[in-house]
Length: 621
Image 1 (tube, rainbow, N blue to C red):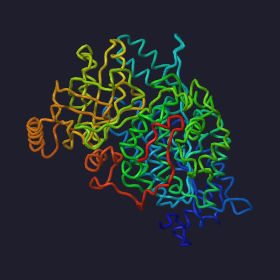
Image 2: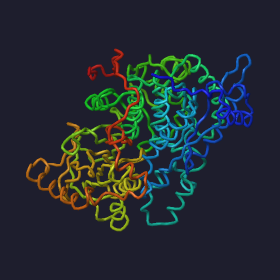
Image 3: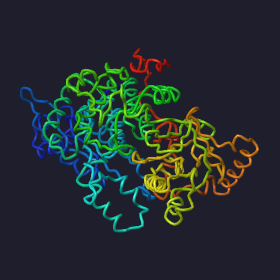
């Protein structure tokens, strides 16, 4: 790979502003011709991002103190901190602005690509918040491939209802959206999210922070502490500068760390924490940025993924949204390293992969003196919280590419003998569903399978997540003791629970089978076969008739189905024209052709994943 660092040459025109920056930052102008180093952060319009600036400033000051020409100093050019921008999922869920959420991952990647490439940073420390910007950040660092390290800004503390003492959070607030008492709704809103930090449950943020830690790009002990933990602006800042200095000295780069086995490790942990379905959207993007074009071929197959989740990898955490506890509770019992130790000791992780601390994963866990599972917040592999992993990908005639994803850890009923049979109730977009839930909640019946389509990467465009409707349906089901499923070509928040199936593809906007479902069709979710089917579409004549009607509607509307969402900005048009399927990460690529910088082979290490407590379930793939 060609070097990606950029040196400032001695042309006076190019040097003069660089000298001015050095003087303004209080660093030595004589160092402007050395490789550059700096801090980046992710910013946005929610509590998730409010702590980022303080961490970036603290790390920048530690870097500044280490930079210089003296003995033991880093002979580097220090650049000013830079920030990316993103929207807030929590504020935008249920609105059309939610279309920008996943696109924000791409915007973060693009912004950092410009900064890293044009500035040519030889070393980077990134502070990340919310859930899409960290993935965009990691992708950019992998593509740039110079020494870099990530630190989570940290999760928020859970809220508490002062009247009942009950632990509440953002998901609680969404689940009471349909409550008839406006004062009660306001009461929950006032107390659900105190302080600063990203969503505190095992939603997408903490799923992906745990993923980034286990994949090796974040020190494990920095994942779980809350945003307001003083360690983040004190000892963690010093440690990060030290780790980065060692990485630069050893030329340890992101692609040396993020390899096939480390990505597999991170996927295993995502299963074991009952993590968000979004991991199957973000893991392919991380793999792509690391040089592996097709996650489901190069890293893990759907067959192996399902076997591991069904038979080998249990859920170890009693965590929200399906359980009781938050990430701060996991921190209190020892942190993410406890989970990693349990899985490593059971034979489920390859401990020989390298990490950003300069140690192997196993060595990092040992140095941190990771505790044993407490059995209340974090369980052991031998005696887990749930016997099966939290995620399952589905095939069948509605998901021929094995794109559909179900969060089993969050299912609260309806899977008798691992099968659900329901009646389709079709909505041409999320807005129609929300209006029905607002105005006619009693119209939803037991064993309805709600279909929300034209909300995929191209259709919406932007593939919004659906925390608002899933939360309302969850409350409806709990109040009436019924089961209502929901399937969509969009995606879900990590806070969603219930029988919800996302990423169904090919999406409706591209003529996928989900576009041909009609009200009243039987929908079958069969976890014994890992399939999602609409039996009516098995009839060739029925399928041909419905497809012909769909083709006619598309042709009459200039090549775009009229139920697709409005793309009224250049950014949304870019998503409509370039978004790839969820199985390939849902990112924006020219002509919908996945782009990989410096592709590489997914070489196998020889490590054989196994659960020593379930030897009968071990299987080679």
